[in-house]
Length: 118
Image (spheres, one colour):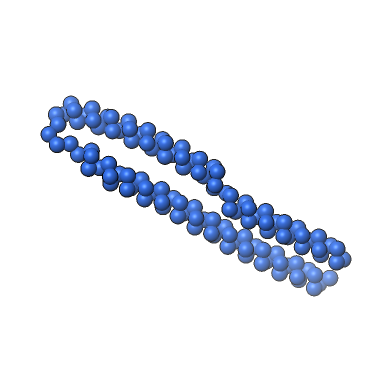
């Protein structure tokens, strides 16, 4: 009937709004995570930057030291990228999928209720 359709339409609209809110929360969490990683990298650079300054070294020592630090930095970057990829793979879509499944189950239950009422 029209009332049931209207009721289902309202439920669908409300559920879509809930999905939108949950997605926004997910995006905020993802953005915050990216900002934290950026802050960590910046702080690490600030701590390591004074150590990179050399006092009265010869040019040969400077180039050797720079090459060593460059290699070390590349290794650290690779480790951080691997860790970031691992975190994104493990937790990237955990919250939205959980909420989606909950809302989908709720919607399916309501569909069954509406069919039973017919």
